Amino acid sequence: MGYQARFRVWRGSAEGGELRDFTAEVNEGEVVLDILHRLQATQCPDLAVRWNCKAGKCGSCSAEVNGRPKLLCMTRMSTFAEDETITVTPMRTFPVLKDLVCDVSYNYVKAREVPAFQPPADLGPGEYRMQQVDVARSQEFRKCIECFLCQDTCHVIRDHEPNKESFSGPRFLMRVAELEMHPLDTAEDRAEQARGDHGLGQCNITRCCTEVCPEHIQITDNALIPLKERVADRRYDPLRWLFRR
Image (spheres, rainbow, N blue to C red):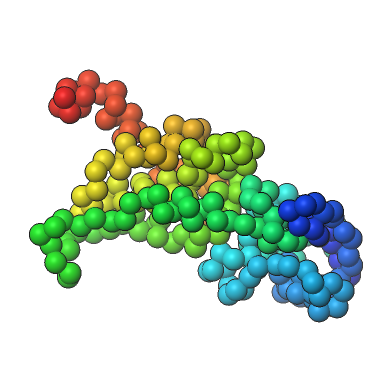
């Protein structure tokens, strides 16, 4: 049996906007994205919402539901009470283009700042050999769908716009950590790059990025904290310092 749910959806652009109230039918098994599509079909055909796969794998439909960063296609209506008003707003960390669609180009700028994997010059295609333990260490990080929910919830850039210049955010610090763990990567000191170029020191490991990850990647515990430890070892361990000198 369906029911009528109350929604508050943010409508507007970079110049400004407001939350508008809607009532929409909800049927068994539906997700928030289904309701937004129904609103587009019946009440506001110009509602802008980004989506692609509707299977939690493309990362396109990121937004905030009741103030929490979520994928709209993975947020089931059954998790809300029938008499609850559900508020849907765009990601707060990024500039709004229209309605629920944000300009996430900041993330692609930061992605280009991470040097690509650099294999040894004397190894040809098909000659890479790694121990399974080394494969397993970073396998988890390759599940990232780049929904940028971790970037959205990270208070370093969410609450402090000027930090975007010097801080790459958890998604790209995780990428640096993944490459730094790779035994065949020959790029120059990625841990030091994380400290200097990507602002690793600004991360204070609150684990908010881990909490919102739809792929359940342990970003903080398995990527950021180990990377911070390796940076600290290289800079402050007296034996390592002497060896570098």
